[in-house]
Length: 290
Image (cartoon, rainbow, N blue to C red; front, side):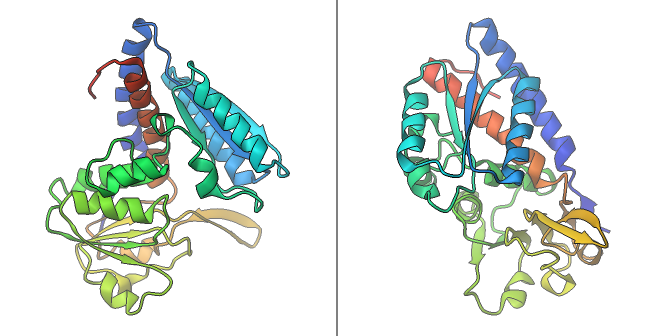
């Protein structure tokens, strides 16, 4: 039976380290501050922003939330971003996705100053990651790598398969794994022989957003499975959140697996706070190592 990688417990340990750093900064008169922009009425986005706000408060990080409506124009979003860029009390800016259809996420996120880019998604920060010299890295990929290293400290030379090529998860994660000297295959909607390729993976990461997509036939015995999928389902009126992997089926042959929920999700939010504190240190000219 696979080892269950407890993302919630691991995130709590990381958050304890972050809080220690925040306490040291506050003694220096520095209060890390993240501003979160949520545009539109997406219920899931509101829940995610609320969780981030609560975690920030528990760690002593100041958070400001800016909720804008579905009809927000590009100019209005740009004006708010510019104000936050110029606000010396704000160290980090997050643009919550998805955006309403009239706004382009890539265009909007690149209005954030790279040195305040909490999610590491501006072109400059992604470029540094892809050049092998990362500074601010997207939160979910950081969380995935952290979880991997709790069961496989040395992943150099392993074959990692990443299903999904989004700029938020798939592409930056593939680069992080390359930087860690894995051999990496990225699969997507145009890929062929998906099952066969997945069965060759020592590390299998699914960020495809399809419930129970990863069955037993996808998994090599002894593989590590990181399930990034968050799929909301309802059966006979009972609502449930499940991952991309058929947990019960693949647990019998995998070495380790993340559950959904309480796997990757808590790590994503924890690393948002991690990035916020690091940005505050850089802007304020303070060096504090984790």
